[in-house]
Length: 209
Image 1 (cartoon, rainbow, N blue to C red):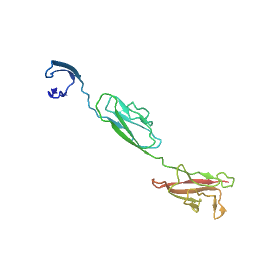
Image 2 (cartoon, helix red, strand yellow):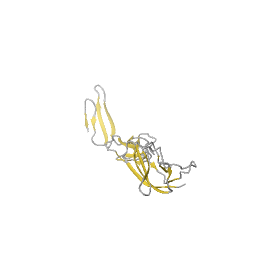
Image 3 (cartoon, rainbow, N blue to C red):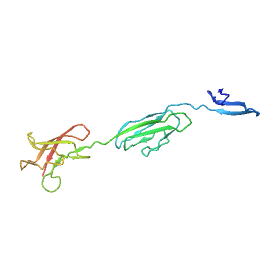
């Protein structure tokens, strides 16, 4: 240990109990004993999923220290554990630091939350009999309206009997003003929601009355 005789500052490089004898001019010599503890320096790290879809959760795992304290956040399952479950509702940055006596910089992790992509729901049958129930074949969405939408319906011979470029429109089971035959038809849909890639959907639908 090195002591600065002018300021009394010292640089302790090892832990232990030390005694310092000092004298102030015009006063008696004095002795002081103290204990030096070396606090270890550590690095805290965090692991966990960095990208989620809204509604998903991820387990954050802190390592490097003996105990932890997370920044208070209602989307964490606990704030004084090493591995809380995070269920963010929006992009969130979580911070953790040691709760012990170790010397460490806080660590952070940002979890990006992507919105749930809307889905297209298409029925497999409809009954255009004017009873007010299921009279029109149309697709619906679990979210907003698609940015683009193309629906085509074909009979069993491959003839196109209906097409639409608006999801709110639907087929009433007629072609050129006449009722179409009962049976199985084929639909093909091309669509995309804003910010997402174009998708294709096809299948069979049954016309009954």
